[in-house]
Length: 458
Image 1 (cartoon, helix red, strand yellow):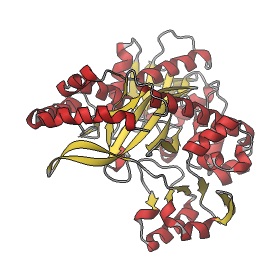
Image 2 (cartoon, one colour):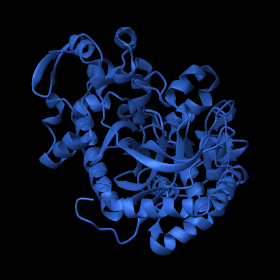
Image 3 (tube, helix red, strand yellow):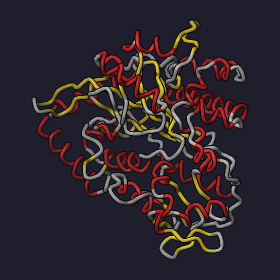
Image 4 (cartoon, helix red, strand yellow):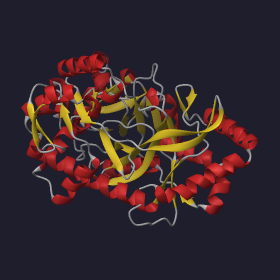
C-alpha cells in the first residue's frame, strides 16, 4: 500500500543525512517551537521526529471512502438495535446511568458530531481498532504541529520536490460544530460563544484547550475554558465565568463526569434545558464503547448492512467480542469464547471496554501464559473486550537516538476525524513499541498528503 511513498521517505531521510549538524539544530528548533506554541502533552513536546507522516492522494481517498462506509454501518446498526435496553447493558456494556443520560432528549441529530476512528497501518492497508465517539483529542495539536513543520528548512527543501497539502482537523471540526448548531440545534447566533469544558486539574491536554480557544477567538468567536464544577445554569442557559454559552464543547468524558456528578448539577441541568448546544451530546456514548466493534463483526447484527458496508468491515475491522462465557462465531467456526481465547493468546488482545491511552491493554503475543490467564479472568469480571490482533506494519523513521541517528522501525497510528458524514484530516502517532497512544509514550505527528499521487491501489 505504501510503496508509492518510498521515494518521498527516502528523499526526506537523505535531506537529514546530508547535514546531521543542521538536522540536530532543526530538531532542537522543532522542540523549542512546540514549547513556545504550546503544542505540549503535559509538559513534553508531542513530536520528536524531523520527518512527519505522509499519505498519497489515493491512500487518503481510500481512507475517506472506508470511513464513510463504516460510519454508515454503525448508524444503521444503532438505529436497528439500540432501542433495546437489555442489549445496551449486556452486549454494548453500558451502565444504567449512561443509558439514562443518553436517553435525555436533544435537538442534535448526530450520535457523534465529532469523532475519530483509530487505525494501525498494515503492510497493505489499515485496520481500525476502536472508535473514539465521545470526545476525540488532538485536532488542535496537529494543526499547530503542521505550522511548525512548515517552518523547518528541511521540510521546505523537501516540498520543492514533493509538494504537499494539509487537511486541518481543527478547521473541519469547528465548521461541523457551527453547522450542527445552526442546522440541527436551530441555534440563531451568527457568532456563538463557546465553552470548552473539562476537569482542569492535572489534565495533560489543557494546552490544547488554549490552542482551540485562540483559534476560535481569531475567527471572532468568544470562548471560555472552564471546569464543569464552575458552570452556572440560569433560565436554562449555561454560563461560564459570567458569560452566556451557546455551544458547550464537551471534552469532559462521561466516566469522569460521573466521579464528580454531585458537584456538576448545573452541567446536567443545562443539558436537560436544551438552550445551550452540547457537542458531543450524551448520546455519543452509544458509539464510543469498544464493544461497538463486536456489533460490526457479528453476523446477527451485520445482516442489516449492505454489501459495500460489509466488505469495508471485513477489510478494515478486526473481529471483536465482549469477553464473557458464551458460544460465538469466529471465521465460520462455532467456538467457546473463553476456551478459544485461552488456547490462542498470541492472536488476540484484551482491552477495557471504555478506557483510553492504552491503559489496561494486554497483548497476547507479549504476555506470559499466567499473565494472559489473569487478563481473561479480570476481563470477564470487568466486561472487557477481546479483539483479533492486527498485523501492524513498521516503517523506518530516521531519528536521533542515544546511539546517534538511526532508522527506528515504528508503528503508525492513523486516526481520521469524522464530523457528521465528512472526514476531515487525520491524527497520526508513531511508536517504537506496540502501543502508539500519547499517554503510553507515543509521539504525535502531522500528516501531509503528497500532491499529484493518484496511483491505483496505493
